[in-house]
Length: 406
Image (cartoon, rainbow, N blue to C red):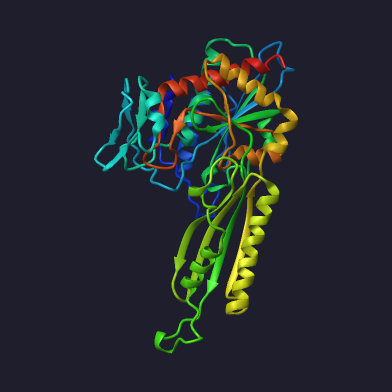
């Protein structure tokens, strides 16, 4: 089976994670895909494939004779889709011999256009997979899942000698908890790759340092006719907080290694309000200064309106994996070589975000990230090509070959 055929099977399984949930996993529907994957892995002859009680799928392809001492290599992808946009009732559409022009997405009123996605012209002649405009596609990261399983199938069917290969499919990556219950010892690899990037050839080992910040504002509501020097409008205080941040440091204003503050939620009334941000920066010292900036804003406003008006909670999420990858740069060198052997041009770039691999690297499993062939994740414009997926499978297979004698 080709990788895209697996993808089409997986995307119709509703696996969106739930950022408001306190269960593990955050949505029980993720087990639906997990059980499907276990059955598929066992059908390939991988007898130890199983899903644990927290919805992590583990499986191992033992080393072939003579390669028992080779580097133990792992591959990881996540099963959940982002809660940013609907992941239910996905209806993918396949466009063969894509002409490179704009694509009308069903009857949704949305169009995948070259103006917003200029890379579309480079996909001309390929087989393009798109949404109907009412849901995301789920290639993030079901494409990674499909490519890993397809690689395993080809390694087995082609009798390719190899060292031990470990795979894991995780829940809840999209809500930041995909590595929370990852069992590194059970996984049993020396090194691993997450298959959770964009276009084929992407290779990432630098990511943002990340934190979430929550401002909780306690207002004082009184009749506006009697409000002079008394009212504290929580919504207005929230506006003050946002206005006090340095200008030109939002996601819209930044690129590459530049960090930002990103307002992700505003909810409340005159009486009480909550303001949510994510904080991102590649440089750790700059990242820490961003947190101090928010703390100073809270201090200034409490001095202005009274102690307890503003409460700030900052929660660290993940660190830049760079310092954990640099001591084992063979992961990057071999990934480049694997891409070149597959006819793919490597593109090393920083992640303006994070992956499970960032946290796993700090858990003792160095884990850079590979592209899967997809674009425009987390929304109705998500798309991927069959050829990009096939190339990504070849990259994974080449990595297995490169590491079997290491």
